[in-house]
Image 1 (cartoon, rainbow, N blue to C red):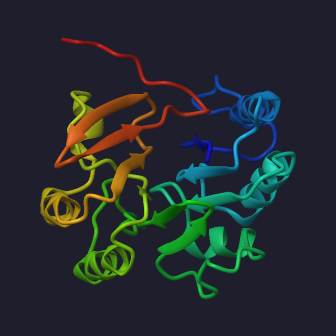
Image 2 (image 1 turned 90 degrees about the vertical axis):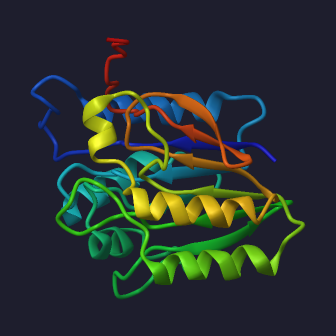
Image 3 (image 1 turned 180 degrees about the horizontal axis):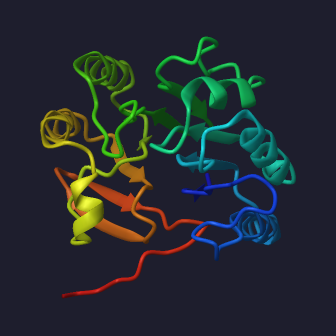
Length: 225
């Protein structure tokens, strides 16, 4: 199974540019065209948060139009720039999403792989967290299929990146600590994949790999100082 990931699309209203510079919609359109030119094309696409910049219904309508050329299932989750209810309404034809705009956590059995989506968004905050109820749900969900290869995806990464600003608004340490203990008990988790950081990174973490997807909108610079 071939899975593509896109993240931090930050689609805005027409004629708006991110930081008065980046045409995020045009960048996403080029990314979508690139995905559809791959040989073979992916079986699924994960959209790991910050699909839009302001959380408005019009932005979600626009992002749906930009994603429409993708001929495979697209599985979205929210980031800190998203508004849950508007996201769920904008993707209202996706039956696994909550109807009332509640927490966006779900499981999809796609081919030989389980895709487990987590919702790290804290309303009104840039940083993320995973509450006890969601972590309990994850433990139960992973325990139900202990031998099936599983990919967990969420917006905020549980690892430090060395980008100081992003580390200040990452997944909070209590959440990351309990998540680590759960992952250690479930070796079928092949990977945790995230967004939020606007750079591509990978790290080994508690028996699995954490990968961070670069943004389609713009990249943060890498400064080793």
